[in-house]
Length: 431
Image (cartoon, rainbow, N blue to C red; front, side, top):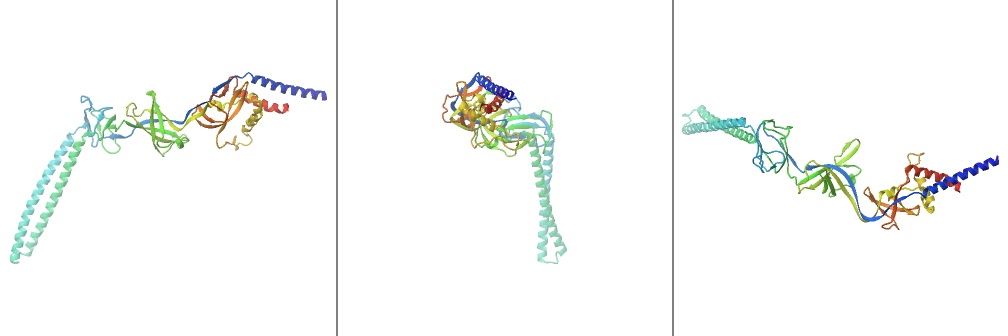
């Protein structure tokens, strides 16, 4: 029995030692890929998309209903009519409606005004007659009250007051008739639709012969952008990034129509009315853009890059150098035990789901690996900004040009996991 147990122990020890030697021999065959650390500038950015919008758009509609008879002449080419892209000035004629009905109403209003004026003249004549009769009655009554009875005297005063009231009514009717004429003339003038601002026609929503309506809720006929030399980009920024956006922040963007050109703008407004779509909260950030060149057009889709922070002349390594982890047996002997313990400590605790995977330090720290013959040596670094490709690091003894490991040609994640388990299980047997 003792011989059997001894044989089993020898076999188990020999097997563990063989596995360790095999892993160690296998580690010697790994080919490391390295990249030199370098100094340079790093920009931390936030990416978003948005739509280019005119700064101010004016909608021009009809103020009276009617049928479109013609369009105004284009300012740059009088042979053409106002259409999409036409330049307009204040009071430029955009369209004319059929004005026959409104001219008739003006004639009617003028007739009513003439009648009201005649009524005023008639009331003035009547008042003059009544005043003379009143004066004569007063003079006779002042000489002898018996000549003019009191009833006749009261009637003269009443006629005078009535004539004055009739004149006031006539004058009021004259004022109303004059206002009606002014209204009819204004409505007649409204049959000519004019631009209220200087700008460019973005959209013409009416055709010849079309009958248009007027009033609240009626679609506009023309859409005019006041100034296409100044544009805005309305971009949607995720709630996780909105804290890094501020007014005056530099923004670079490009559009699909000009893929080789990069444009710049500045954040002018952060709107607080957030929107939620599929439980994702986004804020609208307005970016002001100078379009003096005229290359940008309204409603293009822009891909924006918000510049959050810039670091000058800092040490940079690829992000892969921070993420890469070697096998335990490929680490230099003096750091192997510590590395294995760190791997076990950073493994998640499955027995307590509420416990975090690791305690994060106040300042992010990481490890880069330097090649030493067929092994790698860890160098602890402090991690700074990252642009998604490069990461800023700070470490003592890491100079520019130092080759850091970014990968190994014969290592994958499954092999790494199995090698860690093999090392941690065989460690007690070695002791």
